[in-house]
Structures are given as structure tokens and as C-alpha cells.
Length: 424
Image: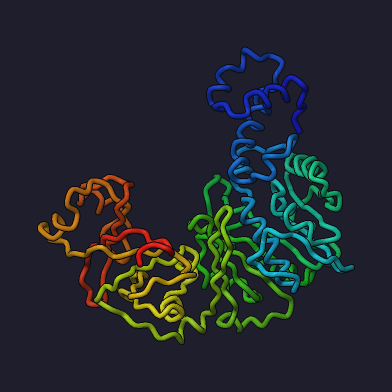
């Protein structure tokens, strides 16, 4: 760990909100400051203000280099994972993931095999009597040990070791947590489980020999069907989005889980928002196949766009069936109905107009609109290409959806966001 002398600490406090790139150019003015260490701390503090607000409020938290800070979980997703574990053990619900209170038993042990910056380990730890943090990078171990002590997490033991080696030698634990590195030797991002380090699929048998349960964090870009194929002992799936951007694919592995049961696994889709309620949408792939879904070429009064987590999980027909909506096309993933629905897991819009793509039609619909929020669903042009064709800048108060209807006709829909109390 860098030596944080008093001059360096004062520099970090004094310049905590300043531009890091500009500060780097002024290094010669501060010979007594460990400038690389100071800049790392300032950049970390600034990132934590948004990503880890409760840690950012604690004076003395040490931050790692940029890559580790970039790869660590946000506070929202870390709290959600703590709720997943608590709900699995019958002590609460995943929708109350901000509450880490749990009755402890003699079996409360967790091993985090890929500790990193230690965010997930810290937020999971209050549910356990003893926690082991495992990390192969010594610098991250020193940072985590410092932070755990500062946060009062004295029941966490820090272990500088490779995940696989530790797993092979460790005593059994109630829960294991693993978040494999998703970058190759050249630093490029990878998605497939086998390309990650360590390979969770190859370790699955050993994981469930050493733990009753394992919580696995995977890339949000990974195809869910492939994940379930590679990890057949999965007992539950969580697709986690933050502010409608998919961030994590979480799988709960359980000892004794029947490999052939993937079609009946609960798939929990959630869109986390700062300060907002967490209301998971849960379905199974068996339910999705069995759902009747009506398709329509007629646009009703309201347009519905599901959250990204539902789209990622493939809850297409289930969404229509649950809410009594009609789908615009099997591949469009937009829905319509005559009633304003509360509790819909996504965005709701009041339809103002629609048209085809003839010049006169477009001119009538767009009028003097020069900028718009544009979405393309099941449409041959990308958003960027369509924006160029329509000569529209990004932003503004107008919302446009380019899509294909059930009669295979393409159209442009103009709509405005609909709050619960509005659009009556």
C-alpha cells in the first residue's frame, strides 16, 4: 500500500473535487506529495460519490487503481446481492435489499473467492458470523483489509491467494461468492464463462462440494440459455439492471439441484434506482412458453416498453399475459393497451400519433420537431442511421419509436411519457 504521509493526505482532502488530469500536470509544484497515490485516491473518491455513496462519506477509505474501481459492484447492486442471500435463507425478501439485518446461526460462513476492491464482500458480510475474503493481488488485499477495519467489519479474514487454490484447500462454507475476471490477457473484455478467470463451469462440482450455495456474478452480455447450459446446478437467476441498464447476471447454485430443471427456475428481473423501490418481476421459461400472446397492428391509447432486465431475460409473452396487453409484433417487444397500468415494469407512454415512412406522413407527424428521444425496436435501421434520415438531434421532450407492427408494416410512433397521475 502506498505511504500516505500527512502532506499527501492533506493534498487529497484539499483537491478531492478537482480535475485529476489537471492536477497531474502540476505534480512538480508539490514535491512532498506522493502524486500517483494522491491522484488514485482523488479519482476513487470522485467515482465513489456516485457508485458507493456510503463509502464516499467515510473519511479514510482507501481506493484502488482505476481498473479495480471500474470493475467493482455499485452500492445498489451489492445491497441487492445481500438481499438475495437473505431471501434465500428465508429471513427476508430480495426486494428489501437495503436491509442487511439477519439472525445469525452457527452455520453462518461466507467465502468470497474473488474479493477485488471488497465491495460485495463488505455488503454481504453482515449476514454472516465469519467471512473470508480471497484475492490474488496483494495490493487489493491491503486496501481491503484497511477498509474492512475502518468500516468495523472485524469478522472478515483477508487471504492473499488464488481463488482455485483456496477453494481446493478450504473448509466447507455455507455460501461461496465468485465474480470471475472478465478480461483476457490483452485487457479486452470477454463474456463466455470459459473465457473468464477462473472458469466457474469447470469449478462447479468443486464449488458445490465446498459450499451449500454459490452466488455467481456473470457478464450481463452473456446469453442466459448458455449460462444455464454451462451451470446446470443453477437454482435461481437474477437479471439486475441499474437505471434500466443491465449490469449483472446473478446465478444461485445449490448442492443437489437437478440439472434438468432449468425451465422451472425462477428468473427475477429487477431495475434498481437510487432511492426507488425494488420490485422484481419473476417468471419461468416454462411459463413464457405456455403464455398466450395477442399480436396487433392496431395501436391503442398507451404504449409500453419493458425494462431492460425483462428484455434480457426473455420475458416477452409473459409480460403481455400478465398485464393484459397486446404485442405489436413477435420481435418488436413493445406493447399496447387502452388502460394506464400501475406497476408495469418499464416505461409507459401516451400515444400521440403514428405514421409510415413516406415524406408527407413524416412531415405531418414531426412538424417543427428538431430533436427527439428515438428508440428502434425490430426496425432495419439503427437509431443513429434513423436519426440521420430524419435529421433529428438527440434529446428534447419528444419521444419517437420506430418499429414493425403485426401486419409487418413499419411505422413511427410519437408519444409522451406517462406518469401515474397523468394521461387520464
